[in-house]
Image (cartoon, rainbow, N blue to C red; front, side):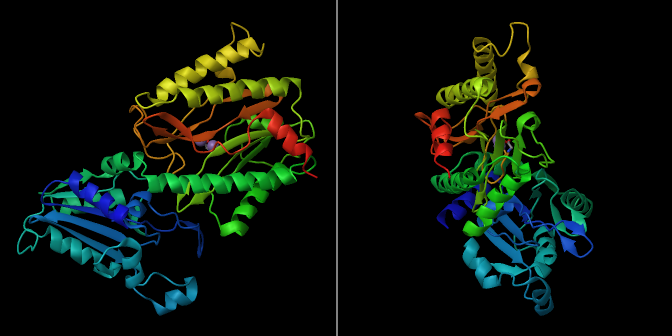
Length: 419
Ligand code: GLY
Ligand code: MN
Ligand code: MN
């Protein structure tokens, strides 16, 4: 609760005097007639309210020497409840968010009108409206996109400046608090259990998606864990396609299988990749590639520190993957590493799997990023990626996913003891 208040204070600090900021939780996307995709809350709204219900709004007003906060949620609706279940009462929304002023969304537009009125305004003259203009596809209502709403406000109030508040939220969200790190760590811990469960079932003769199904079912049965992103399971050559979508091939005894997966905890994501041999043993070339990627994974985690940028980590990765590939005879001097490694080594991680960030900003204490080098040899039917999640501290990087199995001998030993 204290932390939510601090976050809202930080937003007020970023706002000019005589301004208002408006955030929306968003709405569910239509899947087809009378069916909706699972609701995915706008993360900036969630970050400031802890509320995950659609059609909700938050208004912050900084004027007449004080800060005022208003939360809007859907009112009780007996018929709606009969169709789609319970919604938050005003009281419970107040408890979850720690906000005192909770009103019906039916009052939202009146409130904005009053706050932006040029005369008789209890807040004096508001001359700046902050909107979250850069979050993905955010809607106020079913029929109104944020950018259209901004346009409407501009037409109705040409004397008021409209400013994107997204950069302030991004900057706040880039630095994770101990509580946020704890949530990410819980997501990683659960992901570790999910991986162990999948490993117990990994065998040849099943289609790839079966192992994604195991991971997803484990999460659902365990504590209804939501996924951080769509689970990737790719065997053999399929692992050289980074976001391999079909997952319908039968896994062979001789395959390496690449898993890229993660659950959420309190909306915070884990993003882990591991690569395992189906028959429990890395063969000659598989072992070489795995060894190369693992060496670089460890080297990057060691190298990562405050002040370096993600580009620095990427340059370091490329240089080291090259060295490894040459040493192991996986590449000739003339080869271009781009043929075998074609993605970034790191991204920020948080409420979004690819979390909000200024990519070229030097790393700061409290950043959480992934380290995910990989090598992909389509000609040999081998793709290996090893992805960990690390926290940047004053003393270097802390590997939050260090408990997830990745040493070759440990994997082989574990897989021997399975049955
Ligand atoms: N799972 C997506 C990624 O690793 O970036
Ligand atoms: Mn990943
Ligand atoms: Mn990743």
